[in-house]
Amino acid sequence: MRAVRLTRWGGPPVMTEAERPSPRGEEVLVQVEAAGLCGSDLHVIDAAPDALPYRTPFTLGHEVAGRVTERGPDATGPETGERVVVYGPWGCGRCGHCAAGAENYCDRRSELDASRAGTGVGLGRDGGLAEFLLVPSGRLLLPIRDLSPAQAAPLSDAGLTSYHAIAGIRPTLDATAGGGARVAVIGVGGLGHLAVQILRATTSAEVLAVDVREEALALAADSGAHFSTLVRPDTARTLRSRAGGVGVDAVLDFVGTPATLRLGVSAVRPGGALALVGSGGGELLVRKPGALPPGLRISLPFWGTRPDLEEVIALAHTGALTVTIEQFLLSDALDAISALRSGGVYGRAVVVP
Ligand code: NAD
Ligand code: ZN
Ligand code: ZN
Image (cartoon, rainbow, N blue to C red):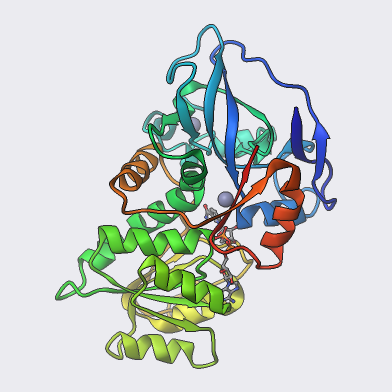
């Protein structure tokens, strides 16, 4: 089968022939029908040797949907023929967090990293940029019923991570006096445009979107943002004044560079919340007394839980969540990665067979 693999750190991914896996024990083989590309794929591809606890080579692709084609003799979960999406963070499967479906926060993460076991599908483990994907257990599959695989795949990371990040700022939004919370969404790409939709569908907050690209502001408006602005030297002031002069109640930073973290911290009100989602390498100094707004709650969400993913899929079934996608054939997957790198993707790039 064809597969897009990272064969060495620093090298571009390559399209190769790989052996089609056969499920044993609890494993399940999924015929891939869609795989989303994520900003994180670029961070992984560009990582320095030893920066990530993964062994090369492995197949990329961590947002995957498809059809169950073969089950190992001890497999549980969806039956052969069922359409599924893959719950991507793969933990030990046995600790308290994993038992509760929060494999993104597996208690044994440091052990797994020490043995270079990988973080999940397509992240140190073979992923879905291939014709078939071997999933370790049926517990990592969720039925998608009549959702299309191309819609479902991005829900498993772009949708799930956004949903989980919003869950982290929800107490702050709920506590906002008078109910009229304002949220700044920085970076309206694959994750950000779904965050805007999830905020609109599940909160009464006013959504203020920020990006460096005009097309991203159009996507923000399409996704339901109330206001959007390009990044300018006075963007923090613009956001604060849109938020009654005191500052926004929460910031979702889907970029995470030094510049966006500075912007977020200058735009948020005392007692507000900042969720850092993007892996842009920015840093904040946490110190008292210090420069951060008093009472600021900072969260560092990673991916999401299986129950979160169930809720995201349920939201998509109600029609409240629609992924804007650009489709590429698997044979053009390397071009799709280049398009993502050059900022030329509107919404999410999704690779189909
Ligand atoms: P994307 O490329 O689809 O979107 C990024 C958006 O940010 C683009 O619209 C881009 O124009 C915008 N942007 C870039 N620089 C900006 C700046 N200085 N100010 C404002 N906007 C700017 O990427 P994505 O797939 O949505 O991923 C976004 C980030 O989230 C990446 O860093 C990725 O690694 C990270 N991520 C984190 C998790 C997690 O679990 N924490 C999960 C998935 C992705
Ligand atoms: Zn991702
Ligand atoms: Zn675990």
